[in-house]
Length: 256
Image (cartoon, rainbow, N blue to C red; front, side, top):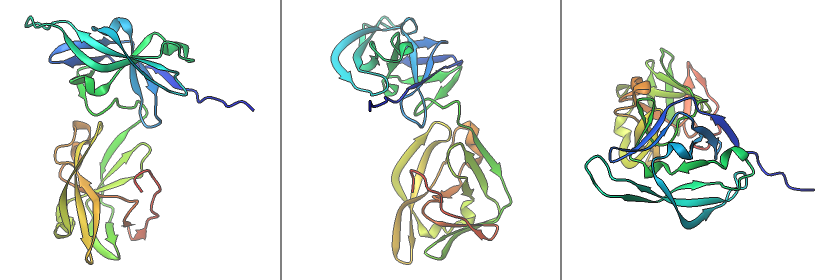
């Protein structure tokens, strides 16, 4: 029996996408494509004419069972408005010239971190492209939420903000005044989300046992999630949560 290769998903992106380096436009496209290289969110692929840089093969390649072999390139930018010379962005792009997916052959993929600033329309985008299938709703609630670890109450609130994000369980963000902050210790971990922003984390110590990076929060979230600013959330997957007096089943996710 022959092995069936996974089919890569490609869709038109109606948004105007731009990418800048030191104020110089490298990408300016109204014709980009969403390409799902991984299940969680898409990448942007661009027509060659929408990339204002020379592509120079650098001898590197990449492999993909669904997209075919990729040829990697350095991007060479022309001088900016200040009269500066050329600038090379090393190993910043690739193309699938012989892809089994016809639509990919004429497109170029640019590494996210090779670009200083990305925009959807006139709104800056952080971390990675946002999925058109993900919605984030942060809703004020009066439900009674209790968080327990090893049978001890760590948080007790009737003022949660419940964050519903596509593909994830509801997250209960709680005021710090309703959390036993004396049991929490800030850590150096920081993560980023294109929908919420940059998170800080806390270890939680209960009955002499420490649980690493069990709680997190956003001091200054992105505008669409601003209502969770300054609140604390615990991993449903790793603690016991009572909602209106009913113990919730721990969800199974990649964070468990």
